[in-house]
Structure formats: structure tokens, C-alpha cells
Length: 89
Image (cartoon, rainbow, N blue to C red; front, side, top):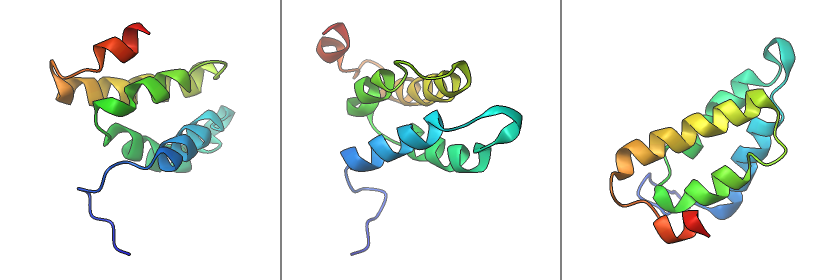
């Protein structure tokens, strides 16, 4: 089945992308894969901000930076449509 960009994000896809970014290491190890995963995460809607933020728990500083940038990209598009209640919880 062909999934166009209009398809809703897959929670498994978000989890896999987070896992890929968390695997990035020193000296560029995993950067190519992380770049692809970042594009997937950054393209999600605001409903995925909380799972991405949760992915930062225990992540390396490098991985946390990738995840933070994805959240920033999503939030900049979302404007005032952020999941405030979920973020406060």
C-alpha cells in the first residue's frame, strides 16, 4: 500500500526514528541514518511532540540535540496548536 505524506504518522515509525537517532555515536557513526530519521520526525504533527520529548530521557547529548531540533521544527509549524495539556502532564 502506498502511503502518501498525508497519511497520519505511525507510532511505530516515530519510535523507530527515535531509536535510530538515539543510536548516533561519536565520529559521525550513524549520522546518515539519523538524518533520515530526523526528517521523518520533524515532518510529524504536534501530536508527536510528547513521544519525541520522552525519547530524550536517557539519550546522549548528541541524540538529545537531534530530538530537540525535531521538536523545534514541529513546534514552529504548529503555532498555537501545541498539545498543551499533554505537555503539562
